[in-house]
Image (cartoon, rainbow, N blue to C red; front, side):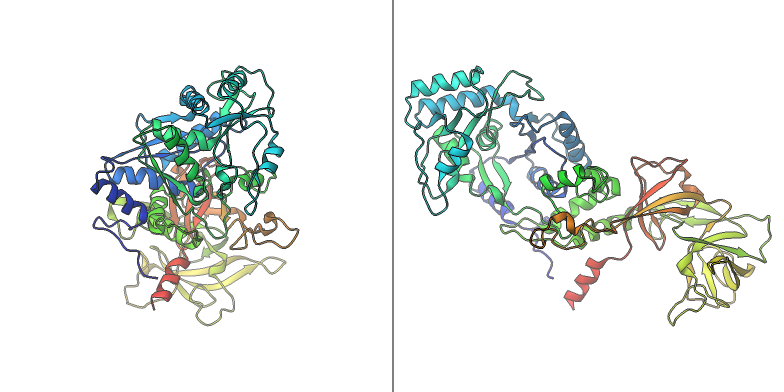
Length: 567
């Protein structure tokens, strides 16, 4: 796959950057002002990260501004909990909205005034049809809609009814305010869309001050205009809605005005990014919560140990396109490994331990071997790791009858213990079931530090942890939440949950890690040598009960895929 084309600053070229460059060159705008406008009705996911990085990133790149605005126009589903989680996610990704935190509810008075202005212009009317009747009157893609019997009410009657709606005289579902556009328009969005409805529910910010609330499409474009947004970037599902965005602003004569641009949303293999379906996973108990490390929510991937820098890099790499496509999740994992390879300290951890007894090593002797935290970054420093007569190695690092090209420990075979000694297997001890419980070895004291003075070489190098000094730990291994690349590929009558991966979580309870990790704080990320990258769980990890989540394995399928494609 060819590398994406970049501009003179090294950033990936895409059509949004081209539009901004042209607007600045032509003086259509004097500066760039974007916004990230989440609805506070759920937790953000990796798809939102793309929008965050795009909007805040463009503002930063062009020396402009980006607002954080909560489009809180539906009090039925919104909550302060979601507001705070969204702010935490944006900060975690490394962006700062400074003093530009806004809510659509900040503008309820102005939005109401704009609605009355539309009525006075003869461009909006109060409709008494039910929601189902409005759907029936709207028509289809092949058939035009038909006018509501209430469409030609006078301006005076509409103003009176709308003000009585605001005063709370009517029940929910009995009246709505609709834009008066064209019931035969080929774009169904413009067939007299609803712009206000009655909701007798307390709002998380305004309480019971309002009982009518603007629809998203009406509030969104006007909020952009009020905040002097220049480039309003949405996903492709809003492409048809752009006609309504423009109609509202143009009909009200707002100038200068923002312009909406649509780009493809993020789709990932083995992943669902539908908020409704993510809610279903949580409510039905398929995951432990919104921050389950298998979830694509930003709180979930943060808990798993994905670094914010890797997410920003991934979002830049995938670019911004005008057509929907699906990105391989291996590309995201590659960005994570690339970042952690440079930043994660190396430590020793044995996930499936079997005891090794070094029979010729003094029983009461304990040595300390100095090991670097990173083989290529001396600034990370070093630590001392204790070594004694009994150690643990990985069970699959030993075989009694090894096949060819098995270069680890076997009867009569010599291997290197990383930074310690050469050892040779002499015998094994088994229980009544034939399971190996101990491996008896001898060591060569002339190989201290893991190197032979006589120059002999061994092919196998094993990681280890002192049985006497190691810390017991729980380790959780994560795989894709969905077994299928496309979780929505289901048989007739099936559900997307049928594609859940039964092996997405494996919990190991008898692991042992080196004693330096006694000081690991929740969120600490490291590499267990030869095993992968791991993160101390942000919710459950304590010094008394260490819990590590596997962030990523060492196998980088995306890098291998790229090499094959380049050949």
